[in-house]
Image (tube, rainbow, N blue to C red; front, side, top):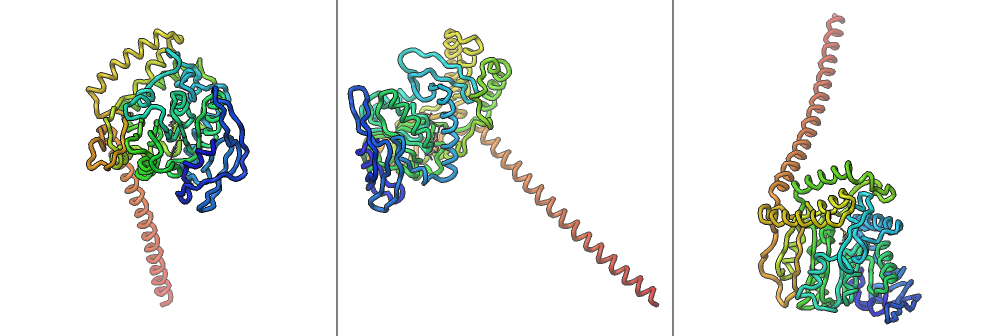
Length: 426
Ligand SMILES: C[S@@+](CC[C@H](N)C(=O)[O-])C[C@H]1O[C@@H](n2cnc3c(N)ncnc32)[C@H](O)[C@@H]1O
């Protein structure tokens, strides 16, 4: 981390911009033709409130301030990605490495791509007319760091953060090995802030639905953005019951027919789960929170339920590139039709939202499309839960009645005995 970056970052305890270095071990690192002096180890101290934060492996850490749920969420991703890295798999942290879409299921097979790096929505966002070329970008919940590395290679100045400390240190080590300078900080949304109006764009890829208090989070984004700056976002918008079922069926089929021959058991998560602690806590809040502070350009929604089909067919057909191309074309065709026929059942959203002099005065996009079957399912689940609660109440009342009956019986028996004794005494 550079000394200059510390000057931009707010103290999470008192919100002052007063962090200074105490005991620092600095190193000169070479990035292409540039030499950068960075703090490898040290302590950042707040001149305003005396709070102290460690810098380790070039990463400033606010880990001690993380709430338990957020710490657990970060630990899940840290454990998952670090394990892959230890097995020499880098497809998840670099757009120049081949992606391996089934790593979480223990299958290391990768997908080929054309050109120097694989593209996607991150490219569209980086090229959006509101994203200033070469500007300063903050990357929220960056995970393994692939998006920030991609942005830094494109000439942006990037400061990325995530609650997973080991991931931030891993991402920094990897960026150094690639000769790319960028900053990583261990923090969550509630503990990260740069000086007001110092940032050109904030990127948030698949991270905001993990953030509990989004109203506060987007307020922070709004404060650090320059006027005219923007939030570029791609995120999970809603769970769609039918598509979840379809995806499960596809994976179950692959588990039986395709994966067993390809699986590397060392990669499999243990216990096997695809959910981190805070998965989905902010879902449903993202659009309303954004529209309170920022002006949305437009929202593009998409179905992702069929994204598995192309890669699965590729594996099933013995990794032939033509198979991937064919299945991808067919699924793209179906996805286009789904967009027209099932516009309420979209799962992901992409948008760019701008900071302007005035806050928005109306909501144009939230709450957004709602999948009726998922809503119905949620209502049924809530009613089933209520039914279970009522059953428990009835069972408790019945037990109580039985206790009273036994008591009455005992009283009755006692009275009878007294009567008999009295009768015997006569
Ligand atoms: C699904 S991963 C996405 C990672 C990365 N952006 C990507 O696209 O691969 C969600 C990330 O959000 C991070 N996260 C969880 N809670 C967060 C919070 N409160 N603030 C910021 N990031 C958070 C997690 O540690 C995790 O790395």
